[in-house]
Amino acid sequence: MKLSRKNFLQTGTLAAIGSALPTALQAEPKIISPNRKRLLRIAHLTDVHVQPESPAPHGFAAALHAAQNIADKADIVFNTGDCIMDSMSKHRDRVQLQWDVWNSTLKNENSLEIINAIGNHDIWGITMPHATIKGDAHYGKKWAVEELGIKNRYYSFDKNGWHFIVLDSTMPVAGFSYTAMFDDEQKEWLKEDLAKVPASTFICVLSHIPILAACVFFDGAKAKHDWQVGGGNMHRDAQELKNIFFQHKNVKLCLSGHIHLVDQLEYLGVKYLCNGAVSGAWWGGNNQEFPPAFATINLYDDGTSDHELHYYNWKF
Image (tube, one colour):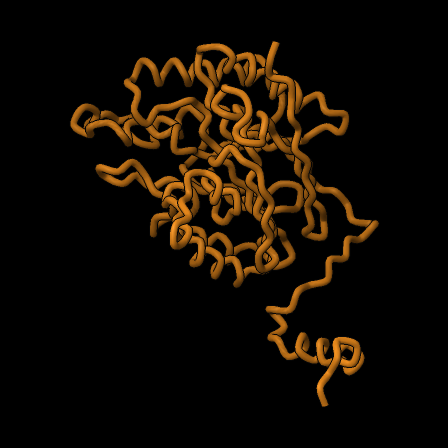
């Protein structure tokens, strides 16, 4: 008998198809408990690209003020990198000047705890001739680690019932600049760190470059016979990371920046948020459809999260 759509639904065949899927691949019902408890509220700032020239310093200060003056107060600031305009190709004095503006602005304008990740523009000298700074102790990521006051280029911590993993997305490539992926040392550390976290503790991952995103298709990607996304725009090892996360169902959220665009993508139970840029189009206004912005993110005791973009006033 040929089934009409009505008969098809009445026979329960759709339900049978769903139940035939492996349990791990069946979509979980989107049930949000009205009694869920918020455990942490985050102000997510990314891609500030601060420099001494206007409007960057007062724009950064304005973003910090806006984040701290929201009626529903944030508990903490997460910064996912590209703190300064550029140290990839700038000489020492210029890099130090940018870091001085970053640190003085935070000291004078921010009262919240801040968690920092390294962005590609925070890495000194990766597009400069190596011979010019080869022996300098600050070459590469060491300077950013020092200025940001972090214990390592990647690390983890627990706060308010969630576990947070801060990763280093940017791998320098000689003669090319950089690519987005985690080196073997970091990947092994990540696996070990995930294995230590109880299954009942939910996990949020921070990286500068998106592990998985849709907005990368509108940031320099090319579509001729097929789409080609640059290796510096999204993690080249995204499939491997997806497989790692799939083994740990408590990984619920990944936060990133880098693209200066906004999207939300959910895949296999993990929500991926790319939350624009404080600097918009590098302090030149909107980047495509998106003005300068930061996000607030609420984390709950059931592993869920929600977020909101804030397009703040950066012009005076």
